Image (cartoon, rainbow, N blue to C red; front, side, top):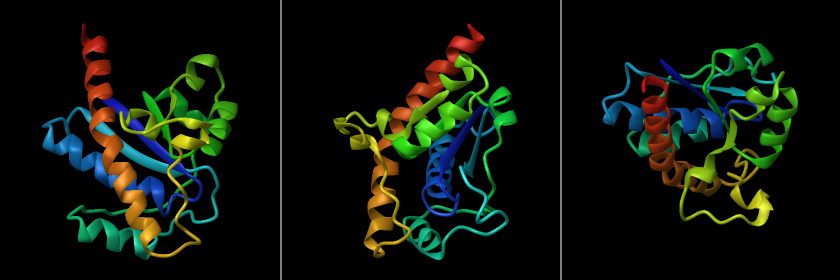
Length: 167
């Protein structure tokens, strides 16, 4: 089993959206029995809550299912995860600092680094998926578009890593 965990701040907006979208890509590729997809937050403010209603609305409108309960990322998870996908550069920094070993820190990647059209013109901040929480509804739609754009590249990377593990 190859395990991927998406991480944002509170695990109610961006990371559950990425989890739902990527899980759909994994299922469409016929890999749902081989790839486990999950999400968490760097903070525990929303632990036990469902996804933000705006996230749910955007996902449902786009045809994605979701059944989510927020939780906080734990350092002990690094051992069982293959990839930890940060939604912005702040999460990337926090997760790498939390990693117990250099090998664990190397598992942390930015989601938009898998989007070939994304540019890193402003340092890693150029690859951020902006937090839509405090903004208008269209920020959630933008978030979905950025997640969808990066998901095929991430799926290709997961496929390649799975082949390496079985080779």
